[in-house]
Image 1: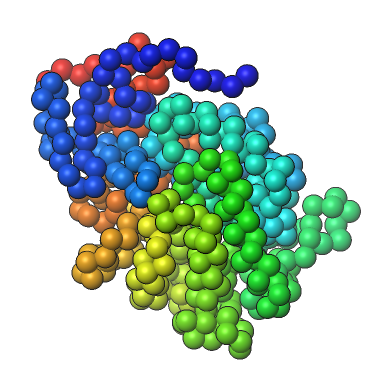
Image 2 (image 1 turned 45 degrees about the vertical axis):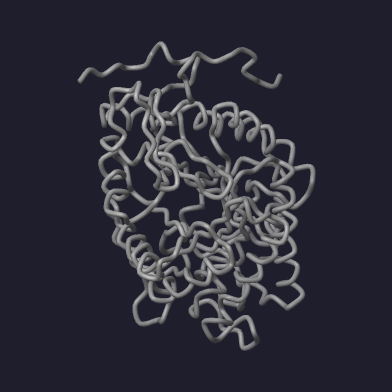
Length: 414
């Protein structure tokens, strides 16, 4: 049975993850509540509001897209509802649904979620409607795996060896994979079929159709997945894109697919709705002329001209020879470079950081240094779906909990 609050909420109660009884910073305008003892200017930026087009976020704490590999024929089910509803109850301002494929052959694995047909809408809408009861917005990451498709779910045997499932596998869990060029990601993965112009046009149309289904599901934010070595990333990089037609070669040729997907999505996703793009700003390969920060900065200006509102900064995933030194906040310097380039040209494109950010102080330092506007958390939310509450505890800040959990709220005294 569908859940709805059928009674009036207490006076001054806002929603889980919001600072108690206080207006916050929206679009850079300071607002204060004289009845509150806390000075808004002393409150952590991590718990300040942010408005992006028609979407108002109650804090800057966002659940990063994380594949669950738990769908059957792309459909959202009880696992997904349980998984995502916890984040809404926990006070996240925005929850990104996992990478959701626009075509069946665009899945990473046979367990991926999808929006390539209408029957996949209802399960997603159930998650969206429930989350909205807690003032949590729902974004969706639309993508296509390209040559990294037909893989084994991450938590199963064989996955760590990066093996592909052959298209003729008796299980029926494999398929032909497609890419800009017939270059496999590794010698253990399938050699992809080079896409024809018709194939490319089909992908672009499929992103558009998935955006239409997202609207029907009530989605608040669409993110186009152009990172981690999946199809769009494969087109962007000269290490994986060896085409000689208009979709390859020069910088403008390699970004053409992404540009056309954005235009197709924007043709149905109205300009008052927020749109983001995730890109891997650094390929982490030496002497191979891979996609890099310089090209990412150049792309960011083009994205803003196409009415993109957020660039979600991550790195790697497109090359099996990548050499990444992972450490806390290791991707933040890239986000900072992107953000500073935007500020220098007086741009308005927002930036998000992600990757081994685990404490409230780390997140707050990123925001205070103007390196990013939003912080995305992945594994930290898997360990604790009520992460905003933990962060509030770390900062000794009073926030509202989900109404039914308010009696457990810790009170701090000055």
